[in-house]
Image (cartoon, rainbow, N blue to C red; front, side, top):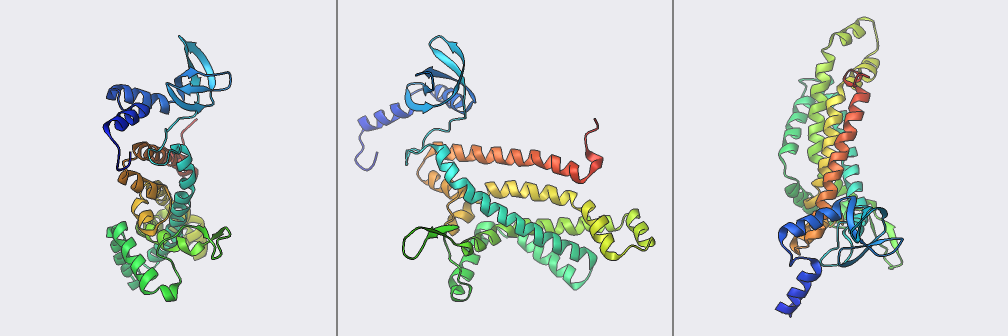
Length: 322
């Protein structure tokens, strides 16, 4: 409404948004919006209106019901209160940024964590092994939002003249002459590193413990007795069998990173889903908050389903018998 809104304006806005109806009616209409099979008012042969609102969605007609129609459609997440854009369009603009950040973070955590974990297992009880365990414990206990502030302050402020890193920024930015967008890879270094600290610590410990357990198995001792080289034993026999719990952790953490980038994105000014959620909460933009949370939930569930297939591919013993 702005600063000069009155009660009449408030009532008009509530009516336009359907907020003047009972909560149960609002909830049922929201479910109807989300459902891929919905009841809508027919407009013409190519599309339909939603209820009494001017939201036009192309859909496939299924059944006519007393003036209305049952249609098959894409879930409708409504519009942002502030910008007026559809929530779907806002998510489609920002989700790639969050996915890129989470993907780079989990790749960094996986490669470094598995490598250090395998090395620590091979050099068990050495100074490297003990120091790595201490650092990993610190990494797991370090809150992401606190780490983000410290890392941004040190590397993008105190040491900015040496690192050349920016405290805030996106992967793409306007060039110095304002002629268009350019790729700025250095902007992803700090947020990806900060976001990858905790999963790196988890992956390291799981890799180390799993590798130690595999190296103590009978078939590893048999491989040594046959005279196989140390390289073949580690990479062809031990590593693959030790990756099952690591893959589970990596996939779970990737899903968690997609949902847990809120503080990281906001501190580093990375315009992704996390940044949008914080801005929407500050402005009470509830359709945008609910739409982004639902999207993250679907991603989380989908990734965990895919993990089951990856897990069975790595370990044939757990495949479902046909």
